[in-house]
Length: 351
Image (cartoon, rainbow, N blue to C red; front, side, top):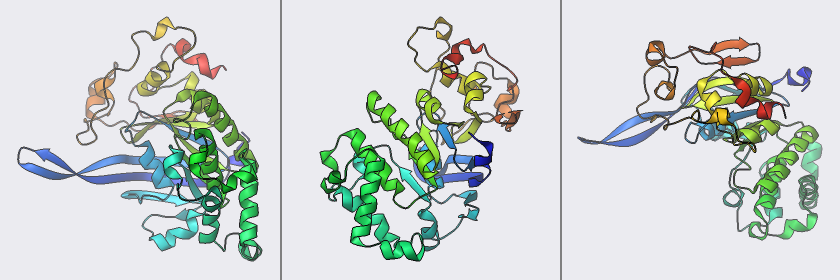
């Protein structure tokens, strides 16, 4: 991707943290505790790029995505969208910014109103933001104008104008996801958070949706945060990849650098776990074992050390800072200089 295209910052997060209050059963009864779902995340997302966020279930990917999509307010830290700080803003102050940030959810059926036709689903945002696009656009925000725009978006996502009269249950899963993508484009956003948008779809349909998202990125000048646990999917779409573990970013790099020279042991384990068509004996016995620690009671030092085969005393005692591997590659590991035999990791990097 052209570096000049990436000169404008769309999203900037500094020390972003989100905690939730929960009740925990103890010997003395129920106690309230604060659980950090996301901790001290620093991210910059540039115009026109796709930043992928990967990690195991429960690591905080969706919580971070919902903060960047303005669903959640951070508990601490700073978040800016288009250079505007959104930290601490009230709902009425956030409303003008919401048109610039949209979200595509994992399950299209549960994110579409079953009582509304597709036309109603696509035209509702235009009714909520009638002033979008200035005076000329406001004059065109009539029932006929809204219908025309909805029809154009249906065409852009590979569906027909006749489908506007149908209800969500009349479509297949892949078609419903195309509708949610069209809905996300209604307000001409610059930034879209896509939370596992293809994980609920058949493999053959996944590739269609991914190719559609790539085409729409170029056509509409979009910027994506693409949340996924599937590294094969991420390799197809992402420009950069951020790896998350227990609420923290542990490695971030451009796609080719991460696949060819991953430095964090967790990232290396994720790459080894990707299934391949040809059996790879070098992977045997190297798949990551064990479960992530509980965020209610995280371990001291590096959160990954209980599962890491190269952990030392410093890993158990001291939280690692993000270390520079190259200009576009950073890893939060005390032993980031330790490189592995990457023969088993090159499969996707070379395709």
